[in-house]
Length: 68
Image (cartoon, rainbow, N blue to C red; front, top):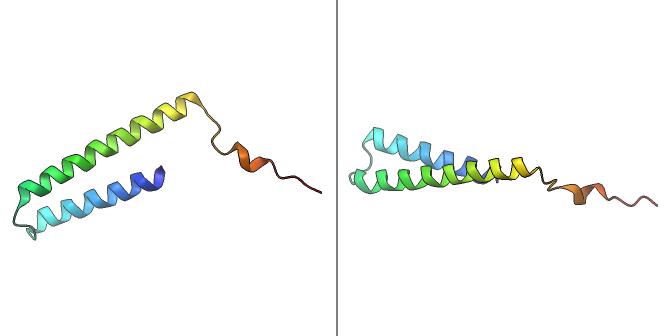
């Protein structure tokens, strides 16, 4: 989940850079794309908050190492 968020943030930064450098001629489409990414990022954050508030141990499976 964290990795996805990082990927989105990188994407958004890349788009911001493109927009400010004037590389992209059709900025309207890019602005739309950026808005979409930001919406996704918000969703991720909400999801994370929800997961955290439920305090589900998501990696409890790894603790069952059977020693012989």
